[in-house]
Image (tube, rainbow, N blue to C red):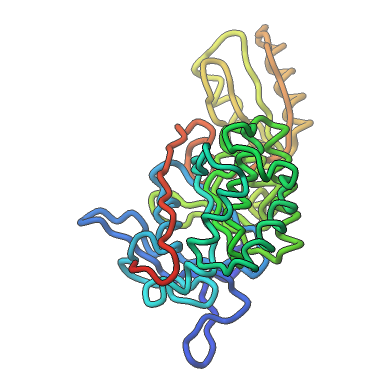
Length: 352
């Protein structure tokens, strides 16, 4: 299996052994064991200051465990994670002061107003009153909810509630933002609006973001770099462009034959430009090729010579779906979405 050219994942250290300032998050050989089961197996990566970093993986791959360690919710078994310059094991309270965490589930109190939800959360982080009022006004403007500050949360649409969740995670002015499936359950228009808002927040608030998602288009459009984890290990890391270039074949041809024959796959694999053939279902094949135009012509000619009927045929560029299949052997969209109960970190100063 060919891996993409990967940026260095080693932790940059200064003379005192502390994380170098350019890495907002630095994870080195991190391990998590539950008894004899190893959920995370020596993963290393770094996230640059101001970067939107995507974490992709099938259910059970270890990505939620990774986030829980980085946000101090569960202890690290071995290795280390430095978040905003603080070791998550030795300085959990300092880490909690610097991060915002947005869970997949909508957790704002529906019976409270928008402003009340933000105020309670700011108080949990001991934000002084004057600063609290200023922060609430700023985050409401940032997520375009100023007009609804006095509205009960239960009267908001799904997209507006998601924006409230994001505002709540920002009200104590964190420098690093963890978002678990930030657009799950939203319609396409609301999803795009959240992407635009996150990009705007990154630029205007100098936020570093680590995002998990089940939407390939979201990862492609939102993330500066993407890490794919599977079975507790890091299997690929790079920009969306680098990851796509790492997959053999620059085009994907999807074809469906009216009649299924067991020799179809072998015939398609003999085409000169084809690098991989994936049987999707009866008569449906996904073909990775370095020359989509020529492979399409050969497909039509083969079907005509055999008197077979093509019921569908399409050509597209390599996508992150193809990257995911290449490195994990399955499609992310086929995975059942698992709801993770993301417990809010204890407020700074409390016992971990």
